[in-house]
Image: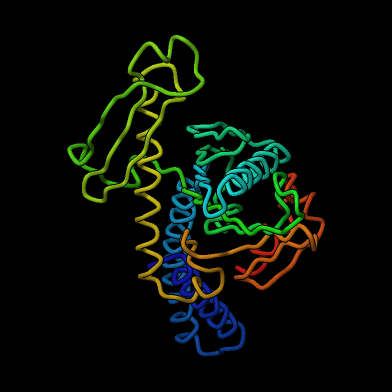
Length: 306
C-alpha cells in the first residue's frame, strides 16, 4: 500500500471515530454507548498503526531523495557552433548551481579548438537537485548568428542534455561480471604525471552496451571509481524510465519523456526568446537565463507537475 492509499484509509478512520464520538454524545442507550466506545478503541489502534506506516514510508522517501545528478552535454548538429552551444549550456547549469550554492565538478570533457565541447560530463550535488533539473533532459536547439559567420545569417544548431540521478549501489542490483574495464593513456591537458601512465579508464556494461570513461583524475583507481559512478547513474536512469513506462503515459504527456531524441527547447537569440515545446511557454531576457537564472523555467515545471 502506498502513501496515498494509507492517507485515504487514515482519513476514513478519523471520520469513523468522529461519528462514534458524536453517537456517544447523543445516544441514551448505555449498550450502544459501550459498543461505540469499544469501536473507538479499535479504530484508535488502527489509526496508530497507519500513522506508523505513513511515517516509515515518508522516511524511506526522504532517504532515497536524489542528492546529486550527473549531467551529460553533447554537441549535436551544427559543427563548431553546436560545440560552442554545448559550452554555453554547461556554463548555464554551472552558473545556476553557483547561484544556489551547490557544488559542481567536471567528470570528463572533450574540448574543441574554439573553446567549445564535443562532450562534457559533470556532477552537481545538493539535496533534491534532480527534482529541479530533471526536465532539462532532451535536445536543446539554438538559433543565432555564429561568431564565425560573416554574412550575419542565423544558424540552427543542437546539443543533447541528459540529467542522470546519481544512484546509490543499494538502489540498483548489478552483477560486477557484467562490466568490462579497460585502461588507456590519458589524452589532452592533465599534466606530465597523467600522460606518463595508462590512467584513463573505460567501463562497458556488456548487456546494454553502455560505455562510460574517465581521465580527469590523476590515478587509475580514481578514474575507475568515477567511470563506475557514471555507469551506475546511467543504469539507474534506465531503470527509472522503465518504471515510468509502467506507471502510464499521463506524466509523459505533461512534460515529455525526457529522452534525448526529443526536441524540448529552442533558444532564439535574434528574438530574445526561449521556448519550451513541452509546456508551450516562452521566456525573454535570454542572456540572463543563459547566465544561470533558470528559476523561471524550474518554477514553471514545478507548477505544471503539482
